[in-house]
Amino acid sequence: MPPADPRAGAIYDLGYRAYDGPRLGRRAAVLSLYVFTLRAAFGIGRRPAAKVVPVLVTAFAFIPALIQLGVAALIGSRVEVVAPWNYLGFSEVPVALFCAGAAPEVFGRDLRYRTLALYFSRPLRRQDYALAKSAAFITALAVPTLGPLLLLVIGNGLASEDVPGYLAGHWRELPQSLAAGLLIAAVAGLGSLAIAVHAPRRAHATAAIAAWFLLTLPVAAIIVEVGGGAGRYAAWFSPFDLLYGAALAIFGREPGADSIQGAAGLPIATYLLLALLHAAAALALILRRFQRVQA
Amino acid sequence: MHVIETAALTRRFGAVTALDALDLAVPPGITGLVGANGAGKSTLIRILLGLLPPTAGAARVLGFDVAEDGPALRQFVGYMPEHDCLPGDVSATEFIAHLARVSGLPAAAARERTAETLRHVGLFEERYREIRGYSTGMKQRAKLAQALVHDPRLLFLDEPTNGLDPAGRDDMLDLVRRTGREFGISIVMASHLLGEIERVCDNVVVIDGGRLLRQGPIAEFTAATGTLAVEIEGDAGPLAAALEARGYPARREGRIILLPADGDAALDAIRDACADLGVGLVRLEHRRQALEDLFRAPQEAADAAR
Image (tube, rainbow over all chains, first blue to last red; front, side, top):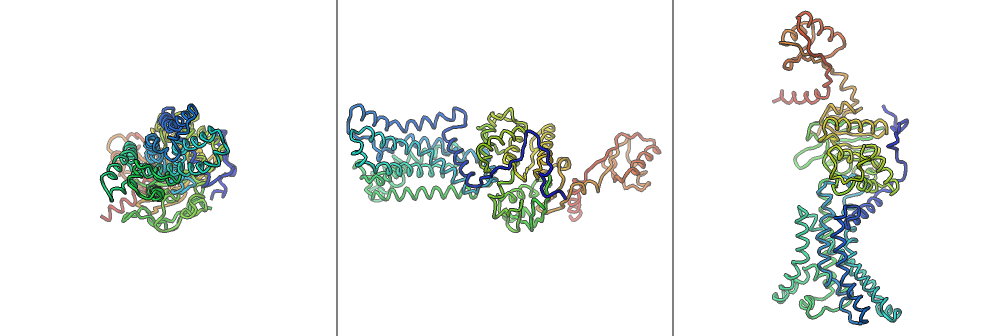
């Protein structure tokens, strides 16, 4: 019978020593996975080519805000064309591209390279894995969805002649921007991930996500236009129309008459409720996928 | 004290029974998990890691209940899967340091141990290269490194020599032996290659069709049934008959005669028989085919029953 402690009297060489330090457990495992996934979404720790697309697309998402701030500063105009509540209308394409480009990689790499076995044999549970990675992607997506809103709110405040007066009138826009930006990131992010984890190949995932965002826009517009009483509900099922409506609800704005939300005439609060439902359903799909996947 | 204990551990996949009421008690040291492909080795390892719930029965690894304490247990075990499992688009350092942190090591310790572990497996020079450029042997070493990086008490290796050439196989087995002997990490190594098990393991667990065939120290298996193989010039028939006449149950395998090795007397008998018959002895070797015999026995029994 060998001794109870097999380390007793072991010979160590310089290349390997036993580790007696702390083991931080499940919480540290989740945090590490979150950070690793967040870095990977922007290509940090990868070859330079992996950084180009996410960084460029993110930069594009900021351009409307920079133009608005620049114009306001140059001509001192009070005309607010680009605002936090309608910003999604200007950043749809970069947000869709970011999702289509980055979401398939979040879980796809681990499925493709069969890395799941290495994660699941470490101190976390399957749902921890899925939640940590989803949260990381939502955080990454919040850079293009929330970042420009914060830039606008802060920039407008700094540019105004009467900063205390501006703050008194507009302070609500900061929490409202936070809520809207994070909601857009959560719904668009979780929806993209739910599509990606069920697509057999990366290219399929990218195409399906792009279609979910961009093809549904004209389709919903047409159905609302010609569909009459039943057709107006189509405005709920295009993710960008849904999120645009949800942002209006968060900022307490009414839709313009020429917008799809205006044409559909549905209560604006329903967009917010349905957006939250969307996020919950997408998360449930992701969790179910990783509960079942073989590792 | 055992590192692994199971009681009536059973796993069914639909109508297929992958593990059938397994009672195991594995002591510390290097243990070979032997079985043909499909015998249930990988299923057993996945249950012991808490990756797959058992259908019935219980298992304790390092004192942790695998069904209840999976995350706590997995801080102290390492797992090297059989299949490719490394992403190609990161360097070994980047990825293994990340996995060390997922295993619960603080950042500084993770970096330090990643470098140490990569040196231990012989990948120190290549540690900043993307894994996609690695050879099969280097990938196997990187897979071993990720299993070792958090200094586990117990290591599960599933077919660690898969896909390696003979030299790479020797290197990997040597690494496994050193890891087990010098660092005192208990190892369970699954393999269908009996020679590998004999070379590095202290103990063996033999499973077949999901059932436990035998378990125990490897010495018990190999000592009991040594076999001598004799090859001569020309027809082996007369020599076999001569050995039978001297009281040795000789068995023929083509040109080769096999007989039990019971000490020097058998060697003397072969020498004398060859001298009497005037035949040239081409080869005389000690064959340790004990583990093969373990498989042959049930197979022959099954054939007989048919």
